Length: 464
Image 1 (cartoon, rainbow, N blue to C red):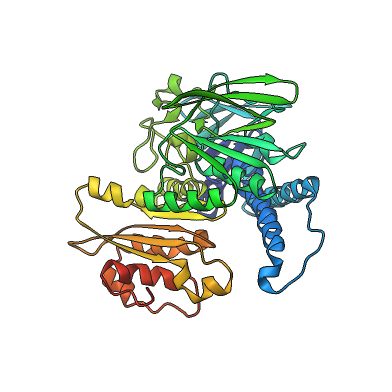
Image 2: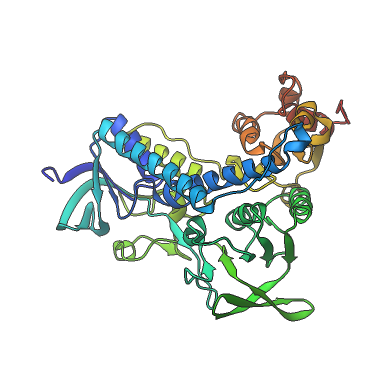
């Protein structure tokens, strides 16, 4: 490398880091981006994208099994797990290659190696060719996070899997235990259950998808159970006894401890930030429970050092990381930056049925002191949903009774992860109920349910 001095050095090329690098380069800054494994980070290679490829295969398989419902016939329906996995890996590889092309197009110096902060504006990079020191006027730490492992529940790659092993299975589980019903856990549960695994989901909280609105998680649970999943809430996995070809799980609830036998366990109990061996604390960067402490502009308190994405804390979402990357790039380029509003960032879970939400739940809005108006509209009242054979779902909206502000929107059902952005824009533009009521939604579309939910909050729903 001839030039070792840059306007910006980015550590980590996940959805936060690589986007920050591209935006900074677009603004005329010289940029180096250091990545130790794969361009695109966990999201493109071992998370968001490959899981969606797996879930798409499961969705099509599910629809093939329902062929008769649509007047079609399909005989000898089956699947090839290896082929499903290979398609998923191919999608990840394609996206990884796309980032390489974008880095080349934007003249970003891409370095594969390990990075460590060595002092103000100094980054030591260790590659397979040796060690070198880069200088950067500004540094962005975008090192992401990894799966949390609890004592006794650690993944072994054989009987107990973390998300990486679950993405590239060497066998199809027959009896599966999923520990944790957040987005990662419930997506894997949905994938394997759809393909025929006898699936049990254990959740320590009082309901599945515990961060979602209670009405939404309750509805989703009914659908999961209808599909054959077993859901154990307020239950803890105390330990796993592993032996040849089987795992005995010790499950504790209010009634006591019982045991169940499984051939595969997926542990999905959260994440921890990648903050080790980066020289952060020596430089004065504060770390709280494995995450870097920042302000609303992702500043760490150490001059010229920023942190974005999962390593900087919740919400742990790729699109939040990307937006932070753009914000910081524009900030260091001298542009006016706009801080992110966490309550206006949507969360999406791609299980079957899908779940999506933005803003406050009804309970959180009430806890915050709002007097609320709540609207609900079921999929069964929407012509497009019925025509698609997807009549199971619900759209819920929460408004401030005093101002009409849209406080939150919550959805469960087919394609809701594509529809939620309408409410996200509404939140960003500080939309009121009147704005949404006066908007003309196209017919026939599933988006009409979004309109009807708003109308219902004010006693004006038309189709229920």
